[in-house]
Length: 209
Length: 209
Image 1 (cartoon, rainbow over the protein chains, first blue to last red):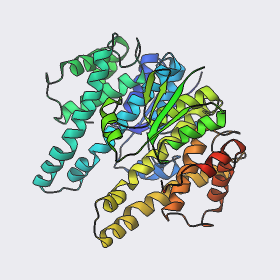
Image 2 (cartoon, rainbow over the protein chains, first blue to last red):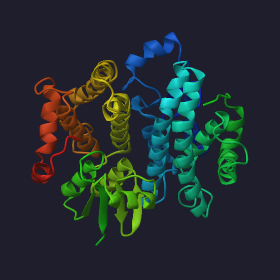
Image 3 (cartoon, one colour):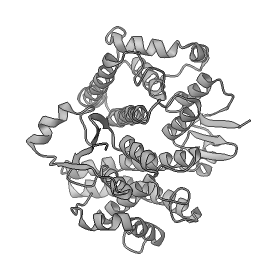
Image 4 (cartoon, rainbow over the protein chains, first blue to last red):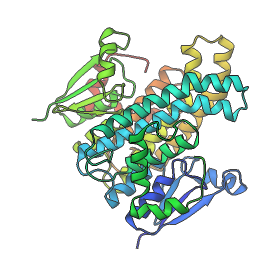
């Protein structure tokens, strides 16, 4: 039996969708959770391939980068799309999600750097909210065209996991209010209530992101 | 015969590696080049899937996002890695390259926003150069371990195309001086002198990035 070890921080971030793929596939894995502000991470960081987590170890072979890992496992377990074109759209949605995350950074930095409240508010209004609205419009448009309720094709892919988990973060951060985007709320509930995921989602440590 | 149309701007950017995959595979494609500051792009933008270029059109089906497109074509034409683990490492390197590009943004913005010279210089020194050194260290390390001279496995993948083209940009921008990283110079020359690419690389419009 292949031994999988996922090394990631003790929050959801970009790594939790990897954990979810294991639960969906009902495949055992070692869920190594590292505290970010710890000596453990300080010592481990220079030993990782790219200086970052997550890292997946597959029978000793290390694979870095969250989306590379989730795509690798999803292809193995059948959650990467059913045709080359579906796979391409799954990848495109996931890259669009990553670009959206990048566009939020100027706002996130104002918080991390303890900028004055008016600067935080200005960056939120001028940068974060327009970026969020643009991203949610794209996801909404895709869901409006979907007959299955999944983002791509007629079954679950890792794009659904990534987007649903991010919607939860956007709710937690106050970017989405309950009921503001019924289609997105419905989608998030559908994914997080999948029988294979429901128990894990309910029992995982509750973190803002 | 499948009709491929690549719509992208008239520079290399994130889209030229897609063009290169077509040349490597010797597959015909329509190379639609749009001027960024033009009415043509202003009119086209809202009609694209995500409001961005590149977009690949495959017999009428649109696929957005540069790395999703290059992966899609590379899988079709045999440049995506030969095993699932090679594919994962190709993806990981490409995502690391994208993260590097993101980490340069604060510096690029100081130029676009015409910040005072001392601010540009400070951001270059404190943000861009460390990010660049870290990224080049990773690529160097991978190449030092490679027996084939390619980044992954024993043959060319789209990770080689993406990284080699970016090395050219880093040379153009003065981040790398000739001879400073012999292993990287050798790698870039190897890729851009491939018989299937050489003529295209020599004849494509010369742009800084």
